[in-house]
Amino acid sequence: MTTPALPPYPPVDVEHVGPALGERFPDLVLPDQHGTPVDLHAARVGRRALIVFYRSAAW
Amino acid sequence: MELQRALADYERNGIAVFAISYDPVSVLAGFAEKHGITYPLLGDEGSVVIRRLRMLNEQVFEQHAAFGIPRRDVAWGVAYPGAFILDTDGIVREKRFLQSYRERETGAALLEQAFGVESAAHGPEQRASGPGLVVRAYLDAPAYRLSQRRWLTVELQIAGGLHVYGRPIPEGYVPLDVTVAPIEGIAMGGVEAPAPRPFQMEGLDEQFVVYEGRVVLRLPLTFQRRVESETLTVSVRCQACSASDCLLPVTLDLALPIVAENLVDLDR
Image 1: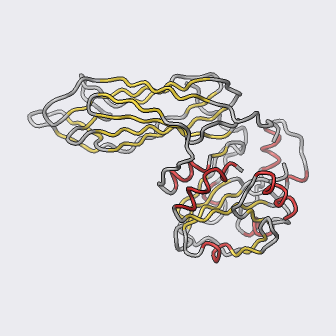
Image 2: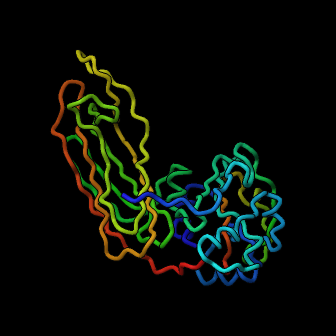
Image 3: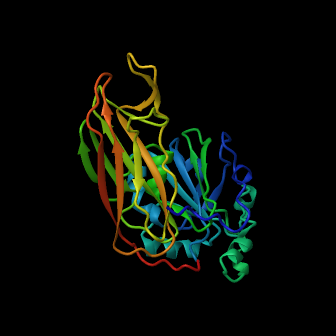
């Protein structure tokens, strides 16, 4: 069985990247694909949430 | 994005989904229309929020160089690819980052593992049964994409009053083993299994650990090369026993077809 190769650059220091575990996710307001401002916590309306950061929709 | 496929499962389970990138709204609008994306794609043009949240990928040029991708200034400002799982109070309960920036997890895998909800969007399942148990196995999406991580889920349902053994195990007994026949171009990680519980058999000094009821095991697969028309052969070997007797040991083979979604451009 082959094992996944380690990437040839320093590993991401997950603990220090982004909001920490156990912390409230910071408030943010950003426009969506329709240009409508979205207040993340208000839009959740008390639901659990998945927030995915990704590179780009353009490339 | 692939996440759209599992969106109905998220909604049904009351989980809000947001995606964030550094793209301007015009790019997001085109992307959403092209791929039929209905969940919010939030645009952080200028990467102000990405920076404030300590999500700026400062290694992006190193990562590109490592894969032989020419330096493009436009890459500066992207976020680290990763996911946050928030509870109903908005508290970060889990952070999921993959170390290789090209690997991605599927929406269905995140749903199953981070939220503990089975996704209806997973791949076709295979079932097999043996003395005292039923096994089913499925991949978390019906097709694979290059560099995307797929999880193989193997679920055992052990009949009431019976158990199967885990490791460590005294000699002469058959522990639960899940193995996958190697396939060139697919990197397979180790099997992730829940912790078995200690078990003492009456009249025996030997120490056992056992699984009972429903047991879910998972194994990560990363497709490193295009694999066409292959079959993933999953073997589950175990022996179901009661407190006094054992049924015959059994090896159950499940064949899961592997289908390429499309050939994703490798220089992304």
